Figure 1 (cartoon, rainbow, N blue to C red):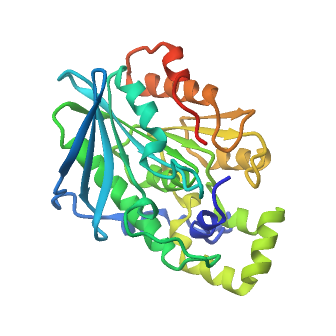
Figure 2: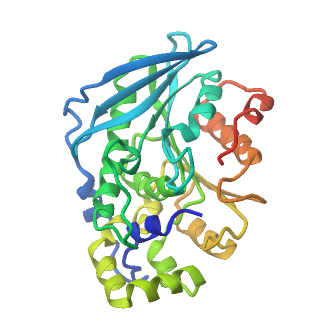
Figure 3: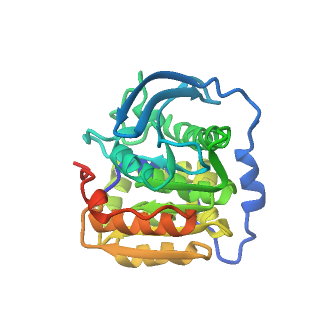
Length: 318
């Protein structure tokens, strides 16, 4: 289950169905200068067989640098490009760009160059707050969105990346981010969103015990104030505008507040083409989800086949 902090970050006003769609105005908030220098720096490189893992960084438009792994297969043909967004599970040793590293190395065998950036909360110098709501978090969330868009710029700057075969995989916190990205970043052909909330105002106002406790701890007035201030960050406004990009949603059955009925509601919000898959798993999902994820990416990004046993060797999130 993603952290309570991530839920608070993403809350927003749940609009009346008769209200005018604010998407055309909201999407402009994510405009940026695509010609701004990336100032790409390579810090070190390691190899796993024929795959090279570059430890790199690039400039964030909101200040500082974005640490990332760039996973590159052997060869010069046009490769598909995949951007990976990790989860925010406190206490996890892979609450950072390492979460999908083994998976990216496996996918390199199918003709994929992968970029795995650290989110702002996983970068050097960041300190978690003890408060139930950290006022920095909405800004960090916005920064993550811009940094991911710059990640698309980075992938497309490479001559060995096919510009019409770009994908995104996001887990939990970065599935939420991906929900916004799906409506904002039209250069991404397909999205895989794993175990993330896609309508957080609805979740925050639910009768789920976790949310009821949170409202009691923070106070309804403060919650409503945060809702008003961060309304434009809710994936609710964007996932319905993902088309023509395709979207795969992956969830564990009854994963805390991510109940099966709530997930079905999320699925209804997403534009076509789309698919929903459930798993008997934890919030980390399981090997079957990884196999399904690959098959989806293979189909939509025209990847080479891969022996399922290779994917099964990828370590599970702890």
